[in-house]
Image (cartoon, rainbow, N blue to C red; front, side, top):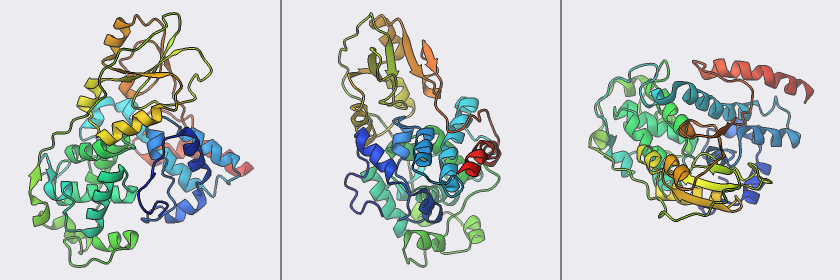
Amino acid sequence: MLFENDIEMFPTSYKEILQRIDRIDPVKYSNTRNYKNGAVSYLSPYISRGVISTKFVFNELIERGFHAERMEKFIQELAWRDYWQQVWIHKGDAINSDLKNSQHPIANLSISKGIIDANTGVDAIDKAILSFYKTGYMHNHMRMYVASIACNVAQSHWKVPAKWMYYHLLDADWASNALSWQWVAGANSQKKYYANQENINKYFFSNQKDTYLDKSYGAIADMDIPDELVDTVHLALETSLPHKQPIEIDESLPTCLYNFYNLDPNWKKDKAVNRILLLEPSHFKQYPVSKNSIDFMLKLAENIDAIQIYVGEFKELSEAYNLKKISFKAHPFSSHYEGEEEKREWMFSVQGYFPSFFSFWKQCKKELLPIIITS
């Protein structure tokens, strides 16, 4: 793996983030991405927090001289993030419920204690969960394994397990997380995704036998809930925000609002503005995240010169400090802000709702094709 001991897995200085982009090997990624030690980018926390965009990463790779055709699989993975965001924009709160199909069967509306305790009986998964609690990171392939066990083996409705994972992820992105869990559970896809022991052993270099997953996919789909997953727990997830402190506002200047999804240090960098990181308790009550996630966000915010932190609701901030000209970046979580909404930066111009990723990608590919030809 790129990181053998979990130390400095996700540095927070902008300089180090740019260095990480410089180390990406998008060609190697296409052949190794599913393996535990694959050449993945480790950029997702920075994209999710809005420090960098998918388009920024794409442009950097083109400037480094990578042929677009050879790194198409990597570009496609970036496009998945944009796709989930587009679904969220156009479906809104509907992504909080089964989007296309009703998940079935459902035995509980909680989460297996075996998953929470990293005691599922599948060694590679248990090790990954323990590491996840420590680092806030889980390999994408492993996320699918965990979701499959939670939803399709333990028969939990996807919502609570998805919120558990979102809570701990440093790359917490509600659209990507919720819609991916629905995809695994068959609520946002035509069929469920199942993992078996052979697949886990192959991609995570384990050699475990005789688990409840050491069966054919059909047998796994038909079996009863294993003893290791029967007991469930109800989660009480809470976010610990910084203590509210007064801020100083120059009323002669416009104000730029940052939030959990926008920590771009280059946004209006050369403008004289008030810069405020708005942390709304109502937002984190509905979508709680861990202390590790909050601490990571606050460290990333240090890349933004003269930023001040305000803990409170948008209307409370606006009225208390008589804010006149407010700018913010478009995002589903900032739709209630009032002021000048700036468009987000997408990798391609393709926007709108598409019923599947590949219908979305088909349109993106039309914009990619001229780049492939010229490169």
